[in-house]
Image (cartoon, rainbow, N blue to C red; front, side):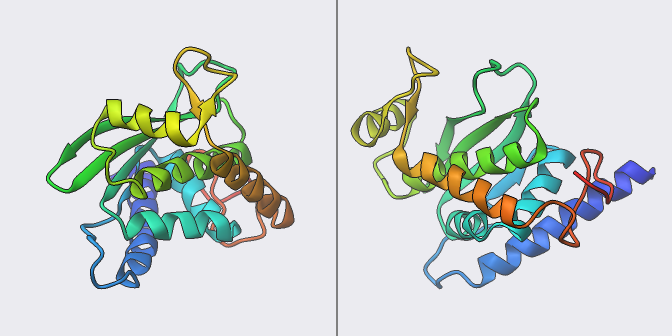
Length: 195
């Protein structure tokens, strides 16, 4: 097992323990079946961990999702249009569980990724709060009700004031606690260091 494999395993373990601790504190009636936020690579894992340490707003969003019936797969998208920071899409439903994907623009800086992650996780909370969202069609219907058309995605994108506010709040919290001021700082390769 190489150093990068060990670091990947260690980061996944640390994130699992952190998220499991939050899930264990969830109400007894919450449907918890493991981490509900599922990073798809080491950079997202490290930045999510960093964000949880530096932002109480992001931490609260994670706790809310962990105590829900929604799973969110999070990944970086190298092919995302340069004017987009992120996007939430429907993946599917199995029994009472619903699955979403938060895609984040690969080219963003570390703090931009964390703030965008908070923005997209707020969208996931909006889905959690509306049990009628069970497919792509009902997801679009939700955003037609609670959102406004995005200027960035004129044909298919929607935006909410709550998601924009969460992203801005997390940016302010990240400025107040700069990278490297916590013990959980990792670079894009999963190694300790300045982001």
